[in-house]
Amino acid sequence: MFAMFAQYPTFLTFLAVFITVVVTMVLMPMWIRFLKSSHIGQQVRADGPQSHLVKQGTPTMGGVIMLIAVIVCTLLVGAPTPETFLLLGATVLAGALGLVDDASKVAHERSLGLTPKAKLIGQFSIATVFALIAVNVIGIEPTVEIPFVYTFDLGILTTVIPFGEEGISVPWLYLVFVNILLVGMCNAVNLTDGLDGLAAGTVMIVMIVMAAIAYRQNLLEPAIFAATLAGACLGFLWFNSHPADIFMGDTGSLALGMALGCLAVVTKTEFVVIIIGGLFVAEALSVMIQVFYYKKTKKRIFLMAPLHHHFEKKGWSETKVVMRFWIISGVLASAGFALYFATTVFA
Image (cartoon, rainbow, N blue to C red; front, side, top):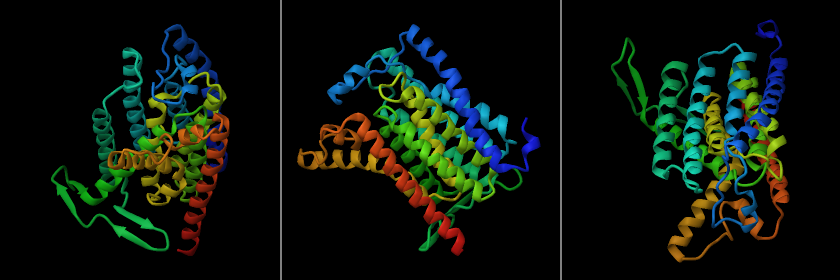
């Protein structure tokens, strides 16, 4: 539709943000009304902060509208390429997994949906298929670069499965790495989604940086995809700011985490994304450290995990935690982009 503006990639990238914001903000009120009339609401953890009990029953699964906006705007603004469909496919599948999880919570009226094992099987399956298509169809090199240090060739242990003319290459080490990265990011963003506006705001910041990285690599379609994700988060924030009218649910958080990991693979920033998305990594690590330490000592390092709940327990208001975490996310995302940019300049 916007092919006439193909020579203006900067305009298309910003247009993607604008249109996605508009679509999200137009559709979300109707979705909220539908959820309320259907009595579909969030189930709050009984062992969570007591201040969160008032959130019980707040409409959830806002990620459905975010995904619709991303799909429509990515296909509308850009000229879809194999990378586009691969990124969209993995993101939508992760969102669908989250939707099943959210629906299970609502149906059983409890804060736990799918079993952890079921969710992990689904996430690893999506990550595996994504990695194999990325290597064999898109031509992604099975390498991981640590800027200014070393580039690891994770394709040294590769099996070629006979299929068609060239067969399917399975770079085992890279496949394992991509699985850990994608599933890790998926669950890290999911863990971050615990306060009004926290996940949406931090993911928006990170996606702006990922769009800039893709744009610098002349990967316009991935840049547009990242821009639509930023736009969806921005539009969603209007309704998710404290006190939230709706939550994105696992539908949104799993999809956003998967999208971030996939963008890192497509742009070959698998290591740098750990810095760019450092806040998500810290949230996930706080849970892992808490569980490990408690099992060993029966004591807790943090007052409550994930990390944002620790600061709530220390007396910070929900809005103060969210704003300060946005700032931290912005600093980390900027540092990651600066490292990436320096690498490309000195290369």
